[in-house]
Image (cartoon, rainbow, N blue to C red; front, side, top):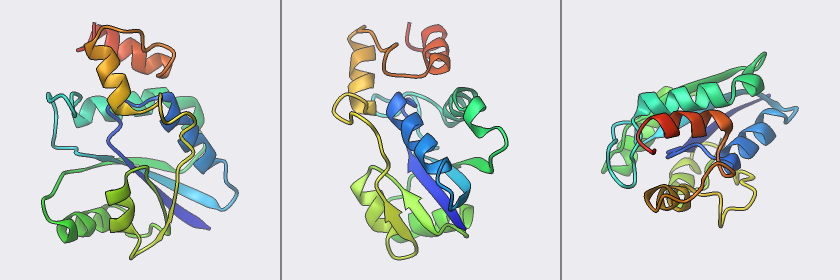
Length: 161
């Protein structure tokens, strides 16, 4: 059985992330998924508008029906300027990881020395990506079709009105 880790910033969680997580946990050989929220120490910037606590809450609420009866944990991982330190911190959080999922090339390269690395199935990555969604929010464009209902509800009453 595999211990999977899925690393992302989830700024914000979108339907591409949800599809990837669903596909990971539905694999017969995955018995645990550890969702790692990267840049946990960052918030209130254009690239990282949401705090770790908000992102964790969004993920928990949005995936509630998916994570029932599943072995899923959620942790944060702070940014580091040193790749080796970042890898060490990740391995402390998820020491048993045997397979990793990430859409970020740098993250994938960092993880390759200690576990198998797979591409997550994000659906339409041209549209379903954090940069695009944050830009749409900034421009006051519709995002409801790009994010889970719980994410839209939280973002609507929080920072993104």
